[in-house]
Length: 427
Image 1: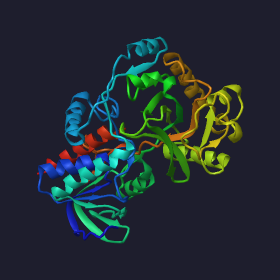
Image 2 (image 1 turned 180 degrees about the vertical axis):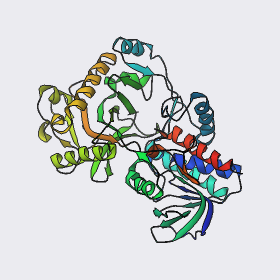
Image 3 (image 1 turned 135 degrees about the vertical axis):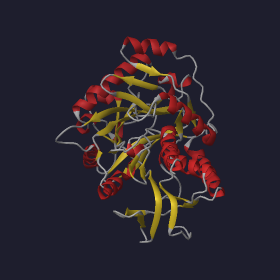
Image 4 (image 1 turned 90 degrees about the vertical axis):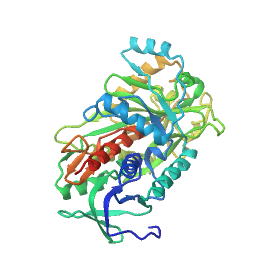
């Protein structure tokens, strides 16, 4: 915990400094004299704002339809722009791709997008935090909330300090789903946890995915609830992220100031909605991730398309041979057999989508293309909200990707605004 003396009471406490928490903090600070404490357990905001910082500004991308209507989303997106000041990416002639896609029952969405880059996102976040501090928001970094107190508007920090509040907004993100579940159980909040996205991260030469020259992050929807997600190009690379019990892959790209490596990566994800008796999407994702850890010796796996099509595993000693003419950017992924690790139904639907994509953008399934697994998005707990502004109990709000109110930076920020609006409207 940084050397910061906290008060014993705040009007509003916000847990999590991701885009959801920042959206709430700015809204309250700019429109009231309420005392605000923003708590973040890490040294800097994490999640999508820190990692790549790709922003979508077109409804409904990022906005779960059960919580959002187009008119309100558009209004709040304009408010998000005022703070993030996006520089929009180009979207040129994509009509030829759209026509090819329609023949295959595939939709390509036209989205207004902005991109900061992992190397520049820290600078953006520090600027936002400074603005909040200048508005007298107390920002406590490297400060962890251990638990909420049942039947009292109090929380206990990891150092056992107790802080009281009038309103609390929880936006801890996807990674802390289990902590969030513990707090909801304590508060008596009903929730569901039955949706998870399972998929792969695809890496290839940029020349084999030419659509990115016209459309920075193509949003493509396939049959059977499969979609592309988070495309990175320019100086693009793949990373391994630690979750509780397993690793998941993810993609980053650096700002345009960095030298291009002429590679592209994107996720191909399938949404799984579970029913009885297996109802926890979080646990299902963890089980699959742990299985990969067992098969790979403690990492994630990678396989060349050429090997996959031949029904043979990729091997370390031949991974860069012959047609396999670029090196994997995630060097500590283990060459292996995707079909041995991934549930057949999920793999079948994703492979079908990849074949369609190869017809839309020829070159995707070049033998050298690499398939990394797993990419797991344990998107959300789904609390039972008491109103449209994400209140779960008098004075308690849960927002962001970890609560199913958003799927991405801009919608998360908008969900923070909505929760803050509810607090500001109190008599």
